[in-house]
Length: 232
Image (cartoon, rainbow, N blue to C red; front, top):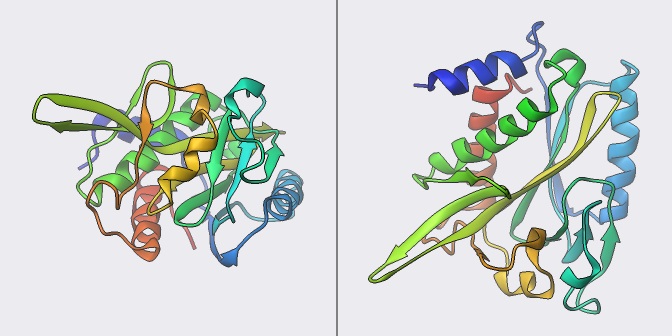
């Protein structure tokens, strides 16, 4: 059962007309410049009323992206993978095989025109998807993304399992989220992920959850419906 706070958030973020969001899964790896060009065009078409909203799920080949708040010192190994400067919010992040990227093209004109609430919705979307695998996760003040707490005899730490970086133009969002299903976690070593040095990164498989990409997609779909409404 949804908590009252999530219920209130969902009521704000759902379209009053109940129109379903297109849900698309790309085959193979999608190059980053190709993805950005597509998002730019689709967001413009949504703003003009010429295309429906879209959630686009894909995987990228290994690469780093630098958001508008990125610091050059956080790129530790510039020659490791291609580096793409991005107009999304946030700092450096990694994308690659085994990581589910979900690009979120929603028309906030019909979803409350509240960017803070929209970002909270993205967070709750991820948290809800992880709950489908019985993985407790949450957000932390001053740290972007979604985090899990890990404990053992005499130790505990918090690792990041999902990143968020969005852009909004004419109240239409693009860019989105990335959830670590089974990426090569050593690939994050070429950057300081999101500018945070004192914490690590993890994935579902790293946590002992042998999830497939299809299973992650289904969990994301179930959770998306709870927060943002129907998909088709």
